[in-house]
Length: 192
Image (tube, rainbow, N blue to C red; front, side, top):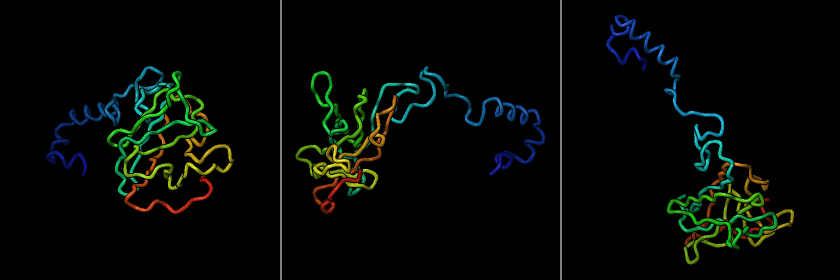
């Protein structure tokens, strides 16, 4: 549909001034109507992948844990950040650097350390999900297996196993297997 069809046939012909003003306004404001701010570290512009303000340099990891059966979010799962050796990273008081998923299966960890290169997703104890395994990007990770380099157990990588950049890193959906369906068959080795 064109703009002409939205108005009476004689509108644009008889209102040359109105059409010129509309054209000028469109050019001045742009197609998006202006707005947004942008550039620099002033907090303007669009938020980053995890919701941090544009330009934020705080290292943030976020994502979602979902049910393999229906894609719904898994509430109460624990996401733990791990170093290259597979050890759960701890904060200054010795607590694990981790987060529990909310009712939609979403999680966010703010202030992730540079040593965080892999992670694990563990279901809430007593929930109806298999422990020590997850699927990421179609590959199944059995945490008790060693990775291909034999340097740690088999955990999914954050950013390909490289150090996390400043700002937000959103991981691909992490899938847990419900206990009311058979888990994947025995897996040997590790996808990475």
